Image (tube, rainbow, N blue to C red; front, side):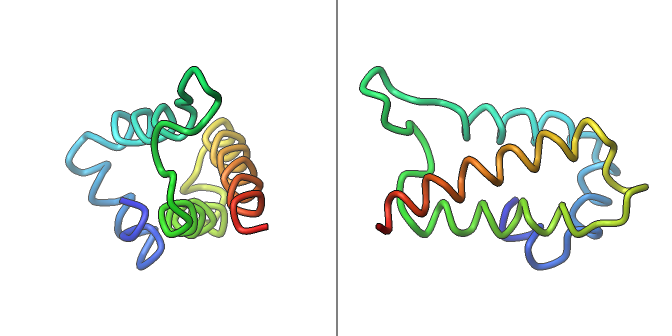
Length: 93
């Protein structure tokens, strides 16, 4: 999904909405982004490449016109993007 969003966010969102799975896909994605193991290490998207691709997909959503992304979704996407970029910076540094 992240790759498709980076390639063409409006088209990807349109297809997800048309199929009726947009909410489920994004809820699962955000849940996976927040999962951490008991040790405090991320459970998913551990590699630099994974973080980078997710960040690019999420930032593509931030660039959409306001009518395509509801306010509550914008806040959630912004927070997830910020968390991912911080984790990426920590991993690279």
